[in-house]
Image (spheres, rainbow, N blue to C red):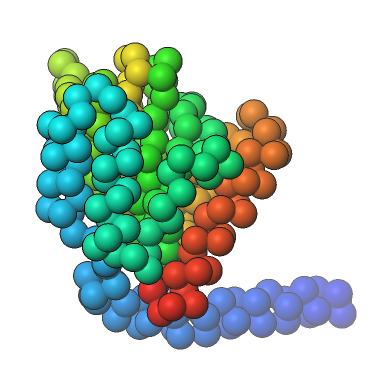
Length: 230
């Protein structure tokens, strides 16, 4: 065996050993955290469905009033974990993910939860993504349609309903016309960010929007970490 071959073999061995050590360290940590994820959540799924339904019942197709109603109640109930600036223009930005496009505003972002308003006034369609968190899509105005291979009819979610995309599953979805939703994800949020950034890095190349996405998401996640919210 030549010196170069020995060096390459030694380098590979060290790399594999390092990776093995990392896996050995982080696997039990992730296992323990996974079993205790519920303790990190500050929002309840029934709470969010209830406030979304009441907002829809109170204000019908007035999306702005529904959003104002929801954010006001959530800020009252969770003052340290809610970004209340729904009516500040710079808090809204485009999101391109899975071929779909819409506007979004982040109400809350942390390691284990995110809560946003997502939607569009003109319709969109795309891939849901296969995520490391359960996703609850509370329809505020309009409709969302969803499809799974092997089915022959769409799932239809009107205003006031909730579409639960279970962790690890995937669907095609469509907002046929204008549609806005309160979207809540609970689980491991950081791995989901790659899906959210992929179209911007590989297709739209909209760097200013990517910057705002990273800046606002980072601001909210770090802010929550600083007060002990994972």
